[in-house]
Image (tube, rainbow, N blue to C red; front, side, top):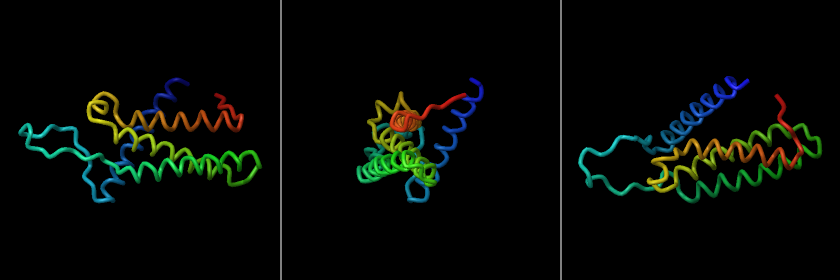
Length: 137
């Protein structure tokens, strides 16, 4: 069971990382590189990868889809799974955007994908507590 969880974790990190690279490329942004500039001091100051509006948009989506998915689950709606998927997706992306907006001295040690993973885990915990759902193995 533990090997399945670990395999799933690394698959999740790979899929989220690839998805973020694709979204950045589609938005016309450069895919971030971890390499340092050749000449120190010659690179312009780095802008945050995502604007506050993007963070606000995904955070709002997380809250709205979270509330809708909880209501749908409690009412027994056939759309409950769809709204839960939208909620967890928004929460995961919100975590990544939040992590990417952190100062460089934080992202040097804590990669934005770890923020993304934390966002999805927090979303799952909140959803489980709100709907009294339990994940069983």
